[in-house]
Every structure is written in C-alpha cells, then in structure tokens.
Image (cartoon, rainbow, N blue to C red; front, side, top):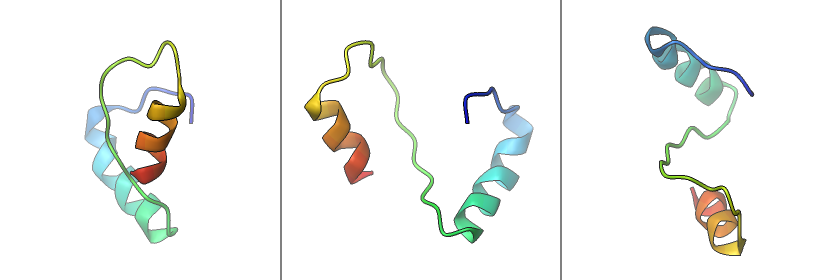
Length: 45
C-alpha cells in the first residue's frame, strides 16, 4: 500500500480486504535489516 491510513478508516479497510479473500495481520517492531527469520514470521502470519 505504501501510504498512511487514518485510524478511523482501518476497520472498513480490513473488512474490504477480508471480503477480497486477503489476510489482514498486525506486527510491530523494526525490520531495518530484514532477514530470513523476519520473512518466515511475516509469511506465517
């Protein structure tokens, strides 16, 4: 997406994405040095 979504629009966005058969996940932290462990974590989500 590459954009900032206003908080009050997130619920509708999540519903729309799930209706399209997409998976909605949340993670936190920083991934400045992406490595295979991060990729596996995100893939499992």
